[in-house]
Image (cartoon, rainbow, N blue to C red; front, side, top):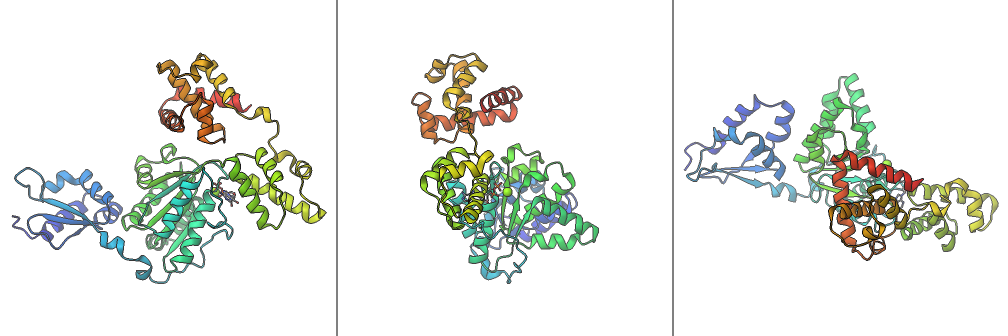
Length: 440
Ligand code: ADP
Ligand code: MG
């Protein structure tokens, strides 16, 4: 049995901690914790989410032991409950009407206009999940992938959806540059408090291209504080980036925060998806694009959706001015350098095996085979990694080109090599060489 009132124990602890951490830390991590009423013989703390609980235990467990009595088995007489009831409150009924007029979204970047395929299905459904239940599914949602593959499109898609379906939620969409400029302006005008209040009062924050926060030390701190404050109130954050969190040159703390929720990759679309995108964009612009022609373009533009769109824009201008049917010949004449010609330059599994075989001094038949000896198995995994990175065929097709492996073997190899690349400088250089040779 505890003798002291539970609330007293907590307020003594708060007073002790407040002097030992920064104001931002206190505000973001400690202040959201409440004492639950029902407690009798142990201190029951209500936390907004599991991260706050872990934070408290990781950083202050020893200090807590000075305040919270210890049970006979040596454990602290301390229990946590996650404030589910906070989560269950439909946010839209709670929040006051939000001023969303200045939400800058590209009107075309809606979910309806986003074409799905194997390379983006998962990330699209994650985005839709977050938009339907902000703060309740994955938080943060971190979307990464190469240039022109639809990251901004999905981010704005979330914005449009929220604006339509949760009218009262306060949402803000900003590029990382925009966020930095905001800080600079507000510092100049001595209105940082107002800015902080604004960001911390949001229900949903959409941040585009977080890679631009790298090497901007002073701004990183402010971003991290905003981030923590929102997350701990279960407010939704969505971030896009050209690389996964682990490859960002940002503080460990921020990287770890970004990995808390869901990290989703958007890849280059396969040929069927490229065709579907072309047809969709052509339809939007009112030009008739025969399937054969769409396929021809898709075969020659493969790693960037923005370029597919550029192709349609040119063709649309052409057919408006000339009033002609869009044929393969017209495509070749109008698109010219946009088309990645020279099919023999296209990477194939054979090229990859040849290149990796030379690089690691392994026979191609061994790479195709099943030997598990490390000096064969690892180069094989590197080859699989390269195939997934450089080719747009389906995993299944690639796997069978490796002598009848399964797609999960290929995926496993890709993951393993990706992970090793983070810490292995030699491997990074070897893969760089292989890439250069293959793409030449
Ligand atoms: P990123 O932010 O990844 O560089 P964007 O979101 O700006 O790429 O996308 C580039 C262009 O390609 C945009 O015009 C976008 O509408 C279009 N786009 C990308 N992916 C798709 C897709 N799956 N369906 C339809 N359009 C897409
Ligand atoms: Mg973008």
